[in-house]
Image (cartoon, rainbow, N blue to C red; front, side):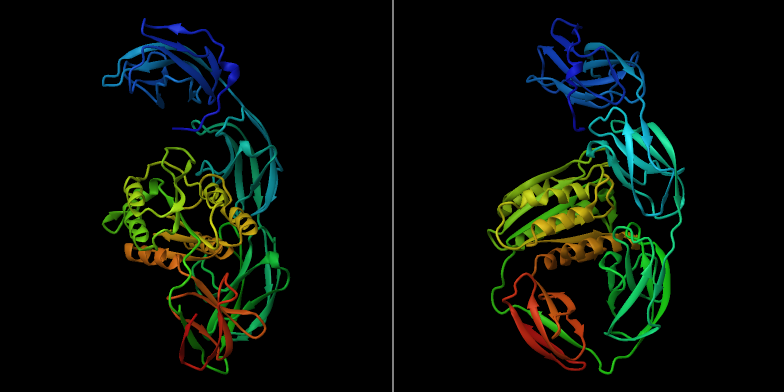
Length: 539
């Protein structure tokens, strides 16, 4: 069911009595795509429901509906196509007899949009709008094949801030009625091409730091990265955001070989500029460090899982649906977490056409049986949307009572589709609550650019990105996501490598370094690394 805003001005229409047992109190007319208040009076039975259909529709037919309430008005969205309709109360069993009806005229609505005629690819710009401003109305940018590529809800203000696609071309700004995704107004938008350039040494030594000068749009989250020569579009290695300054400093990979420097856009990881980079062998061969804990390690202050239950999670991963694989893995996680661990579960995507997100298990000492039962009841819904940003915006409130470090793990198989800004939500979360880390588990992600976006979100969240392509990988990802993290720093305080306690060893150049637990400065140890050797460290 959709979210609703009651329109008080529409409450004062006279009721139409259809039977001695049922009455309908509702407006005689309302704008297309608006939400109206409907009161059903009389002797109401369980599971009777109310719907709006075209006048003359066959008996028993229905569209969006809500069950009749005995406690007050029902909020229901009007159709987005103007015309003559009926509000009907239907019986609870097929053929759903009509128990009451009320005539409704749905009126035409329109919207206007004011914005620049042309913007640069990837640039942010403002759009002023006029229109009904219903609770779920939104303004999007689309083209000939996509109704919208990105959008923002009108409830977020006027003007709205939108971001142009990374690809130049001809687009349209469109005002959508949220109740039925119908366009109420539009205007043309030209997205112009951008260019960039990179200046750096042609050859660098493995593991060394070097400067890269750049020119380019410098849009939000644009970055410069090092990848192997011929890497797929969207892949990335060591990187720095252009927002860090000019030049940016990068550390060369330890492995010698042919690489590329790329200027990548922050929105779709499209390459705007590239130059060749040769990495030569260092004077010494790297060694490795593996880290375990000495005795009982610190348990996370809290664990919150944010689970995607949108329609794409109904697709198969191997022989099982993705949602079923995720449920099994979550069940394993709650079985292995220490007893009493503060635990919370947030789920999004369970309502058709909705950006619903709900806290299914509020933060509290883990009750394994309660958690298992709640997880077992979950399912994914076709045509449900993916509000990753909106879910992350709730984390501070979800974990308000948490003490100490906390881990947030987002499990999703798709991109943000509700106009949210997950990167901004993570940045805001980390600014307000640096003790909370965000990891992303990408389930069956085939799009390299999307995987790159998830990795950058996890980096910004102080967490990790896990590419889970099967049930075993998902299990390992959740197990590692709740373990402590460590970093290796040199004498100057530069971070040389990062890893997970109990995970794979990390490679570093020979020398004396410091290994320390992240978010726990008191847990550190000096270590001397020799060529080709693996040093085991216990913290």
